Length: 415
Image 1 (cartoon, helix red, strand yellow):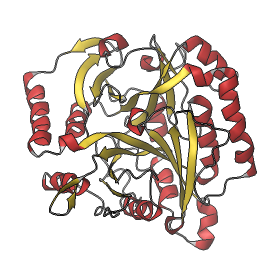
Image 2 (image 1 turned 90 degrees about the horizontal axis):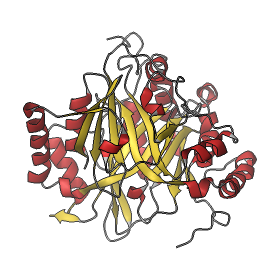
Image 3 (image 1 turned 45 degrees about the vertical axis):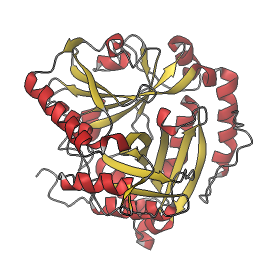
Image 4 (image 1 turned 180 degrees about the horizontal axis):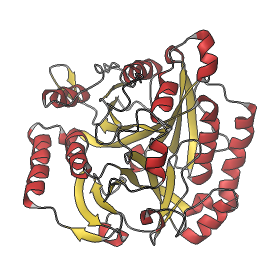
């Protein structure tokens, strides 16, 4: 099914500037005329970094809370890498950890700038990798549009300059990277990450127990894949972040809604070439409606801006889609998954929000921040084929719950 970018009318009530309205169609047109639209494909991998001692614990956590399962681990020159998969058609997940806690590159340098990121200096969501046909042609095309890439000698982590990969420098607006690759992420040995490492018997047994938990409780088959990835940015950088992202990937601006109760907006970008968002998850950018120093006059809630000031511009949460359906006794699948995880000690920020009765709708919930990744895991059930992506009431409730858990108390930064 063809999708006409130029005639599409974005959904939502968030008013964008004349600048945004002028450059959005120009970016769409340039993607086509420059060949970028034909050179870049679907999201093929999600990349995050954790502390040197947290790599295995992160894998165990992902086993319990997501459909991802370990495929292979590699030892590189500066980092250890674990590659995980959920479904051959969905993005792989690469979790990397420096071999030394004193490793220095962009990640610890930027984390030390923010009070609630300092205690985990190596922990940060890195970005996504998209399929590409010709890295040299693509990078030349995008460099002509002032997109910057990493080359050998530019960065301390050689992962970003491996053969078959091309990564941008971290975005000034999101601190996320966009990567491109010609490689097959379903064949992790082809990625050139280093020497393959075999898990010891104790580690494998622990992963097997985590997998068994999902099977025995029957929650594992209900966790389908990544629905969306949500980054929080500063109020004045919302439009820049969206337009920069759309310059680099074949997504479109689906729409934006004001979440008045939380003094913020939610801005959704989707890939029009897939029939299922889990094949190339949506990218969401959330920002305050006004900068904090202006908000000081009105004194409205501003959990989104507070998050950025406390943690830095970064990914806030990764949403996992739960299979739509009734588990029994009036309980939806998402309720069953969440209640099961709660019984196993997984902490959540609030109760499940939203209703799923006879009409299409959403039910969703946020976990607490992971101590390993700093990310929130969202669980979302799209009931009766709901296609509106989100509801304003749900987002307001989730944002409020997260805001209560992301407060910075002076004098406790180094506890």
